[in-house]
Length: 557
Image 1: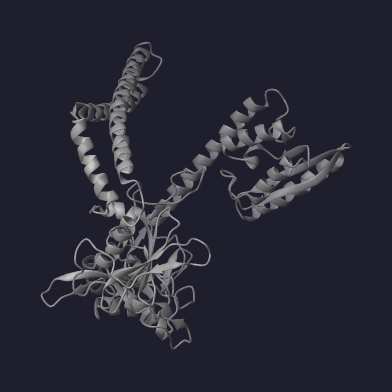
Image 2: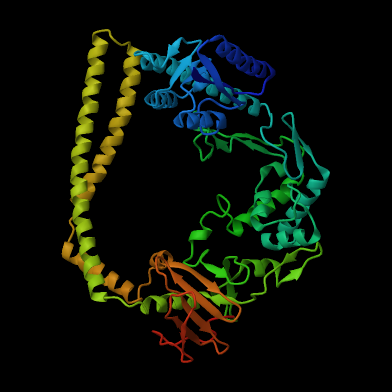
């Protein structure tokens, strides 16, 4: 007896396809029962799943895994498009199954993968299925865009609005919260973190029904144009119909923008005030973009109490100047540890802030304490840099030669097109289209070639470069470099604890350094000398040596 599996799939939940889905399964059972030497192992069925990708098809993937375990010897399915609409998936899976001695029978197409010419026929049928998917995707996108232009809303309900049948209606309860947020920010001039805390403590709920408000959540609401009555759609798009992966639309496709599309929750005057305030407070572009990479310690100072990251704040002096310091995000936004009106434990008791220059001094002194052969490091890194410069020059030469070869190939293709036109193999319109394509490729290649030649024309004084590199490497090794990029890459994290201890960890090193910022604001260090589970410290009550005197008010605040 031959153990046989079957596979069926429908891509939508429509009634006609669901009927087909049931019919397929019933047909396969009856068909296998009629074969005297076949026995049904299992019917694998994916319902409402796309055929262009196998990633989300749980039953298909389970079937392939069972095949690898040798649980059956034949798979029957309705047609190639039910098995897969991706030609690469179709060929790769049928090849793998054939290597395992398992055939696939596509009943409507009359193809068995165990036949000699099966792969050629599969390629043809698979290509047709994939092209049909592409056309379907194109038709759907075109239709959705036309509907968007008519004002049909594609999206889900949100705080303040209910979306049903492509229309937006105000939800009074949510609208009240939205109005409150805009008023607090635009009129009362409160910060987003303060607004989040006040909403949480007052028991206001998010659209998901919880009280976990955050400043990023507030910013998203303040930047959402729907609350002023406008509608912008196609903020995301699907560049590949095979993977269905969505990407943010940064101009790749034209967005659909409609002004005064629906009833607003806030008036346009307040909206303009809020947008100006957001710009003033530096909420540019995508939410959070840029801020996390602006400073050495962004996201790298952790709270020893609650685990939150420290965030930067400015402290102004009487003369108008300021310095930067870092504090626990939870403590800044929620205050000290307490129980709010809703019975939630919120806040953090760390209550301490560390100055930016103190944090930098800790990292520098941790680096300076490392035991290393500085001369060996300096000489070897300098030699490696010089070798990299020479290699770069060679790569540039190879690239120029390659580009020139590509230009010659495209030029020959243009000549071939002209010959084809005169021999009436291609039409004038086809010649024009092909020439435009080749001209664009030539322009790109010429531009790249020019860039390569400009780089090659530069005269490198290798001895001067080596001296510069050696000087920079020496500064890094001795902890004297001012490169923030270097410190950001070498630092793993700092942990600030309640007893004025600051723990330092560097990337790729097992050691931990412990520094103490005492009440006299002297920076002291406890060096870890043991690496066993029982931590052993060599403590010193004498301030560690520093490259410069500690300024007044230096350290923990």
